[in-house]
Structures are given as structure tokens and as C-alpha cells.
Length: 165
Image 1 (cartoon, rainbow, N blue to C red):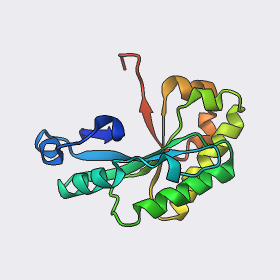
Image 2 (image 1 turned 30 degrees about the vertical axis):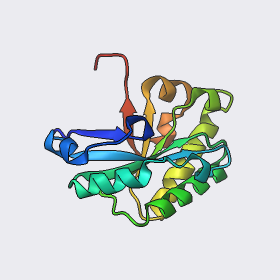
Image 3 (image 1 turned 120 degrees about the vertical axis):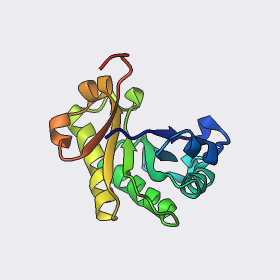
Image 4 (image 1 turned 135 degrees about the horizontal axis):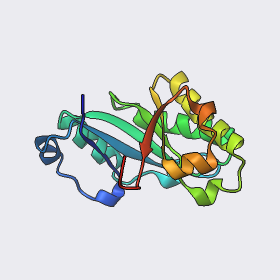
């Protein structure tokens, strides 16, 4: 079964959510914001987060969320998960809460195993908070900076920009 959806952040600006739903989109992933090195989201909160959550839900879409990560430790990742959950509390997610780990500049100097521990910390905390966790990354990042066998217990949202399957 094929489902069609979008992911959104401040970079899309104002979104006409009824039009999105009418175009056949069935779900949306809304960016909560970015989590800094120590895991805090407040500074990085997406300015369109609340508007996009309300708009997607009101349009009848299934809704998930994601946090873009700069977290450098497992404790930072757990903090990011808790802060995301607090921001998501007023809303009902019907899709996962994803950890968007793709910033090579942040993670290239950290060993693969440690990066995987950081991701697992976020995902485990999300699960403990009652959300369905998912890792988001892209193929090259996964191959270069993560031990994917250590993360095989989590669902994966994998972007692949090569232009072929």
C-alpha cells in the first residue's frame, strides 16, 4: 500500500493545509525544531511548528513530527526527546516522532558507535514517553556515520538522493 505525504518546516512558509489534503497527501511530518549540542530545543523551535501541527490535524492528515539533531551526547538526545514530547503534548500524533540525524559536520568527528548510541538514546526516550520512535537519515550518512546494525530495532525513514532505487 502506498501512502503519500510531506515533511514540513519553516522553509515551506505558510502552507495551505486544505489544499495539501485535497492534493491526495495522506500524512505530514512536522518539524518541532532543532536540538542543539546539549539537546535543548527552545532556541531551535521551528517558528511554524504550532501552526503546521494545527493545520495538518485540522485538514484530517495523519501527523508525525521530527527533531533535527545536533546532539553530541546520549544525555543531550534524551533531553531533546523530553523537550519535543513537552511541545507535542497538546497534539495527537498518529505517526512516529522521528530523530533527524543527518548533519555530517556535527557527527563526522564522533565514532559510529557513539553516534548510534546518541540516536538510540533519543529513540528509547521517545518510546518511554509513549511515542512511536523512528530514525530519519540519508543513505550516505547512515553508511558513513552510523552503525545501522545497532539501530536495527527501530523503524527507518531513509532519504536517498541518488535518483534511483
